[in-house]
Image 1 (cartoon, rainbow, N blue to C red):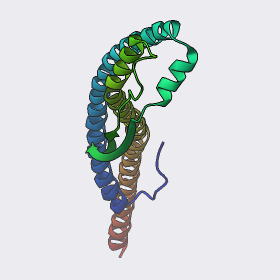
Image 2 (tube, helix red, strand yellow):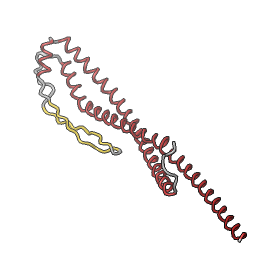
Image 3 (cartoon, one colour):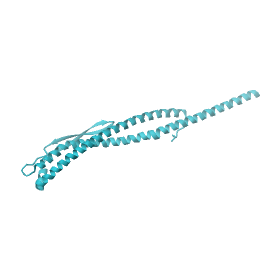
Image 4 (cartoon, rainbow, N blue to C red):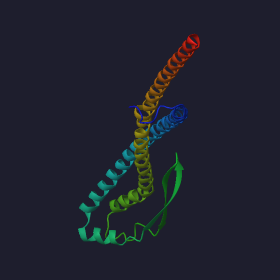
Length: 210
């Protein structure tokens, strides 16, 4: 779509500069989009592998919980779980990836997950809690990866819209307007030349008459 600007030489120069900047910006955004996609695919692979391993470990922990529940009373299980003294505080910093602030989680752990006596509980409960205890750090790492993936996915969508706007709207509009201005200027030059030749003919004719 042609831009609504007057067909002058000054506007033509401005449009050419604008077109050069738009093409440079398009290339930079395209490179950014490709790098974002590469990082997203890399993260997707890491998240998939991490999820599969964590799900397998959780399945194993839940099976131990099931065996423990079948060997001891529900009251003993509840009391054992309430006896934990483990506390986890999560803080975060950020690191920049392609001008994005990606959170990096840091955990501070105090106390222990097993705070009960072993007389009234099953060994399966101990194994279940130990497995879950080992998964806490990995769950935090998975949350970090998934948050990074979410931010990168949002950014690549914004970048894609900008790339498309430049590629399919702005740059074609600038090119079309440049062609229009050049055409108009050529018409004006031909018109000026025609008028100049007509004036010369009139002047020559007046001289011949006189």
